[in-house]
Length: 275
Image (cartoon, rainbow, N blue to C red; front, top):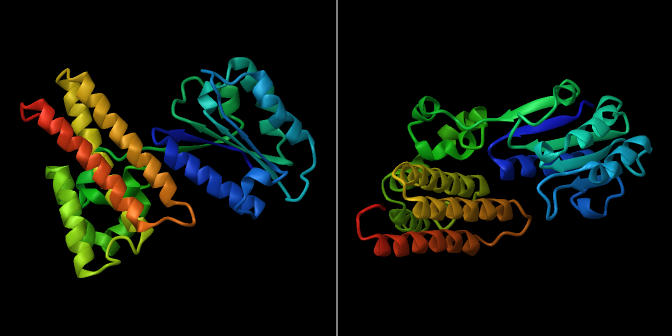
């Protein structure tokens, strides 16, 4: 099994996919206690050095304890020092005992010798043109995460429910909560009965906030751009929580209310129609 580097701008999505792959390979939902699992990321540092990757190298030299193949996830693969990457070369090439998944947001710092030994899986955001192919920009759920094929499959399934939410998000994020409540009044499980659909709503809101943040940055309003960035990060956290086994739908609405309340406060303080 050839090791992989997941490369793209959406780190939460890539990490979620890597963890799910690890669970499937190792046959467990409790990765933290599995003897054939390793997770490496920078802790309090701006780089990952040789010392941090030595356990990965050692794991590759050992036979797996329970599974056929051990799994190591390196979150922040693009933060590996040159020495650390060189230390991993043999492990990546002769990886019969170990499957390595790296997560990287920037590919320029990754050595060509490393790239030649792994499969690069690109997570790219859809372009403006690709987004325009959807009647509903809210179906950016998958497109925003770099999976256009999934977006196209989901398009027909959720147009009827997502389109109103997407229109609100595109025009005025504050109207989204009202739309969601109206949908829930018609059918209590119209939105929260389907986690993929909840994910669509979150992605639509994140896309709208990201666009607003870019517009503010272009106008030189760095503070407001940072605010929008923090709101997108807050929804990223909610998106990750939603993937856990137990997720109360109340948390979904609370997260959206929290974000919209922050928008309202900013709007009240701006006084110039920026929002």
